[in-house]
Length: 158
Image (cartoon, rainbow, N blue to C red; front, side, top):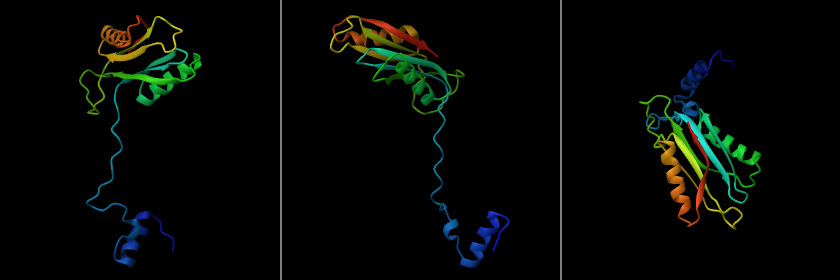
């Protein structure tokens, strides 16, 4: 038997079986799970490769994953052998939007790396904050906890 629409086929299932059967995908008390909420903003990311002290960054992405992927790719292109995303942050598209995802709007990020390159493990830190100065200060303080003087290797603001 051929039906001209899915509704006609479901109608025949109900008539012939007296219940929905396979067409009953969701019960009334179990609504379908909504898709994840879109994360709004202008995204940026910094990637770093500890063994060879290479980095990559990207800003201006519409999606968090896009910023992360591009930053990691830039790090690899720059010769990084073990690139990982070390900071992700975003800016408002509009000053009053809030998407309730719990991911803060921190407009700037900075990467600080120890000045004494070539050590067994060179200290580094990546931090984000609402301003460039705050991001740089946080990254420097975290990096210099090791006792080695650090410098800002990269900063980016969305």
